Length: 140
Image (tube, rainbow, N blue to C red; front, side):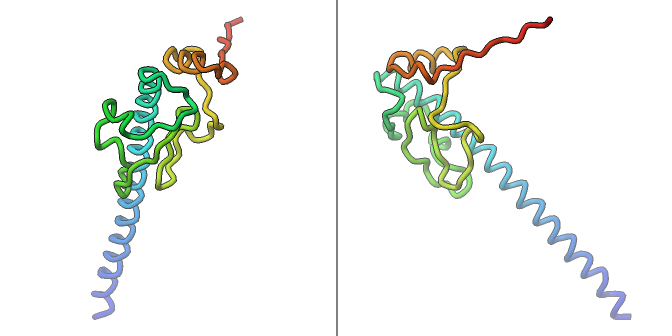
């Protein structure tokens, strides 16, 4: 009789462990998505800061220089609330927890010819070799 009572308890524990693992995975995924979003905001702020302060895309910017463009919550990785390190536009921000900014993109980062802000910054400082001119495919 006690054996039958133990089976539901074991089943409940297994379900709880699986639910905890699923929840933990969802939290990590959410943190990574928010971190990437924060890094996109930081990157855009760095480009604006370089343009306003007449700094080259190869110069490392600290947070005092981009602070006016970024909310305080965007300055830290949501996983552990550790601030991002200083970075240059050419390299892009790096997460202290290893989340990837533009995964798969080689460094130094290229600028699309369609992105007027980045194109202007790269052209102003002679990084024209990093401007990518996409060719639109025409329907035949």
